[in-house]
Length: 320
Image (cartoon, rainbow, N blue to C red; front, side):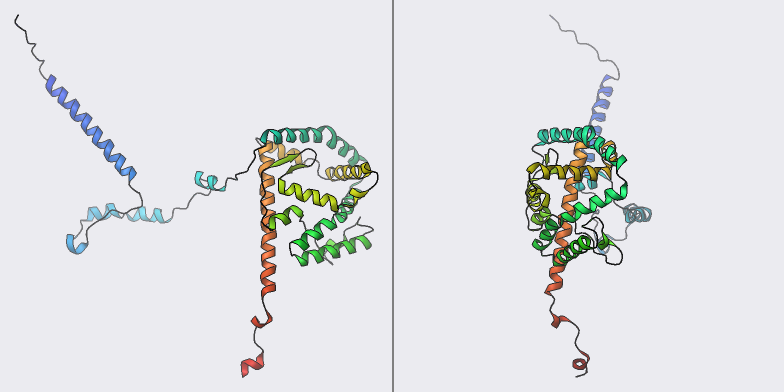
């Protein structure tokens, strides 16, 4: 049987060749673009020496070094709010007990709104602010042993002397600590805001993972050890019977809350996730506090290490 061969339509072969050529051009352009993207953008184009290659055309010189582009390139300033900056400054917090911590955070939140805040508001309505400030000064004066010991352990002897002077002046002239004359402009002995947790941090003990205790709030293993030590140094702990010390602690917390009602609400309402916001704020605060104490200790040690021989020579020796 004779096979009948179909006749090609005119122009079909040319159309197929055009399509193949178009696909080849697209492929080559894509390959060139990929190789250009893979090459480092900062590497300048290599060119032969002027003595060997002769004069460079003006068009190539303009395209290689555009004065306008160079001007803008020199004026480029890295964006501090860019993705890279945010990624570098992001705080990494170890939080393996997050389910437990979130439950304790929620418990403390309900305890504040359902019990502590209503009692503090009633207390605030009855007791005037000067009296509440006096109570705050009294409990701050009772915290002298923990601050004094922390300064000694950190080798901050000037801070320890400041705390000792504050305690003596406020106890005698401040009517048992109800007043704070030592912080006035005349005496100017400011409180040394440090604790045993910071002391452990100064000696290299790490923060550890994040931890939230019921009633006591945010903490960490290191700060928990410091908190236990501070409780042992707190005079109301040794009141008898045992619940007397607990009652004193509750009264101190109610009085302190009455002086800052609204602060917790503002921080909570401004946060997308209050738990994460309070966690990061606490960790950052503790890290900065420890670094500040370390730098102060290093500075005082360097000043003590300077010998009198390093000072300026006497005029007689200079004349000789």
